[in-house]
Length: 481
View 1: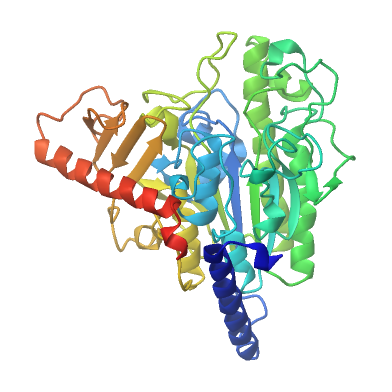
View 2: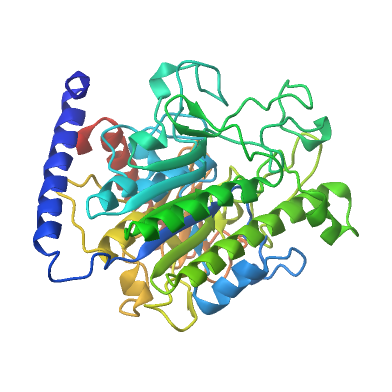
């Protein structure tokens, strides 16, 4: 099978195999001098379409998120945390590669796939003995070419790219969205986003664990609980095996179709039923995050566990039925927009063993920073590493640096942006015109200050153009040669 690959992909895979062998030899030779499991466990948690203002620790005094609030209060809160894109698939790719997804052809939702030549975080940490698991929404390629599944499965063989082929040992994953309650069942029409399916029939998207293996049991009720029912045994078995673990938990909540169980709707009985569902499913997800934290405390592993939490983009816009669920608070824009409300999302991190005091980071950080940060923590360097867009956050977290070392670039359709520590450049027309915003003093992006700071605008335009050309070259395969 390996010999059927194109030459750049083959070369990349052979190089990575060599690197893995050398790391394993090094780990074996050092085994007598250090504990069997010296590494921190790593958990990446992501909500789906949760806005910047949809959590208590972000100032929401209506939606109950007590577990997230406790984590944010005890750990690190990122005041300017950015999803790499204003839609889900690209952001998810950035979490696993440290690269903007325009570098490998994931331009939007249900577009492209995770390429074989890309190096994922799961593949990297496995080289030093980690056990890896993916749970929830994948959205970086299909799981089957043999039957119709979800948005693209069985329709286009060119986008087959399941998580088990990108470094994950254990999977409980869907290609794309499912209802947030009874995930396998098409809800009533007023739940929205059900396509042409009949209410009560199968939703058309399955949970998969391996090639050809679909899950058929324990699929009723709250989807976040269904996912956590698979995460916790993975954590327990990893500890039994004395292996550090990477657990990527990508909840479907609160993406359409938004459904909550009666227990959670009752918490918000003073609101109309649509808001009850939306608020309720977020609280249900928060409860499962608390369940996971409690399990790790009981296992005695919480102190040496790194947990990140964020959302893949801002809240959904005005839907087909005229609803607007989710909040970006005062920020301009929502999902699909590169204004702040579309990409600025809740962000927190805990690592109790390393950071005992609460901390607020005001510098801009991104989902692309996960990969280089974790490699820095684990002291891993990858030979032939493709160009990264993220940076290690350790200097910011340790207080060695107060500002970001270089800007964050964004592309989405005709929109493009470049965010520096203080200023943000934005274009909605493929660079025909630009606005400049002082995000420190004007997070609402209400005033274009281009005329006041023309040199800053020109500098950011130049940086943006260089970055865009770099992404084009990456997508043409230059990073793999």
